[in-house]
Length: 337
Image (tube, rainbow, N blue to C red; front, side, top):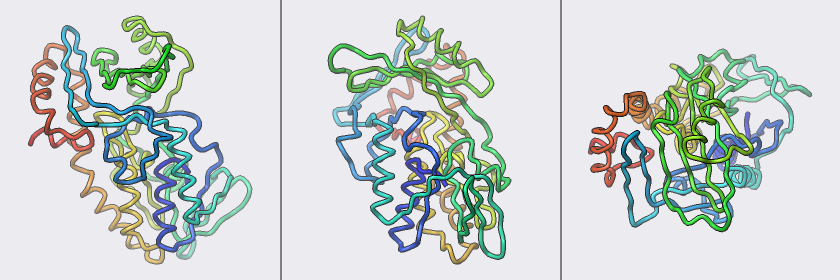
């Protein structure tokens, strides 16, 4: 269920193991735009690189605190900015080329019945051995199967400012005073800058973006937004149903990015789950938590740092700058090495 990048990748991984896979997706793949697509170089450990969806190579970053800025830079590429709609469509196309079948119907409900899962859609009923919920932060599968929700939701909101001529900037900027709950960002793209921020769900994200625009002097054009699930629920498997990606809260709490963690979890699911044996879902649960659980917990501690007063953030930023050569943007625990 769900043809986002994690759902497409998971479907392809299972299809390559000679399982019949159906992807249920009612909407247009890659739309609406909900994410920035700023990812580490490790993204291409999971999917092939394609210059068609790589917009920018990033070699550094600047953290803006109230009365000072802290920057780092490397000679090599540290991350990429992706065109998310193109990236999403590319992964979906790879899934179909691997034999995955596409079903353009809206999910309604699911229930267990005699060793199967019955999936009801707006147009019919399907029977499957295993149901994967890869349908995003508000996951209908998660609701239908009565899983707990992730521990916290942020609301991310962003806009793009078109520039005249190509963008030469090859570093991202983080604004720690743009949001009382998280941070604001400025990300260079091919011909535009993306400005955005996130607040805890229930906060006034539009007002925060307008104040950010006044402070940094950018124009708010088309607005894109999406929920960011922080902290996975206690269980992501139940019977013959499992959650993966944003639906499972497999997201970096300190950045809001979910691509690397979601793709990693999808690969673990395909490796550990045998659709003929429902007990193997517990192996997926155990393995993805072993691989990502501590990083999520540590990343959540970093997220809480954003809420500190600016004068308390400064020493941590100074220390972080000194340690940045050893840090990995997907593994926050590397700051301690």
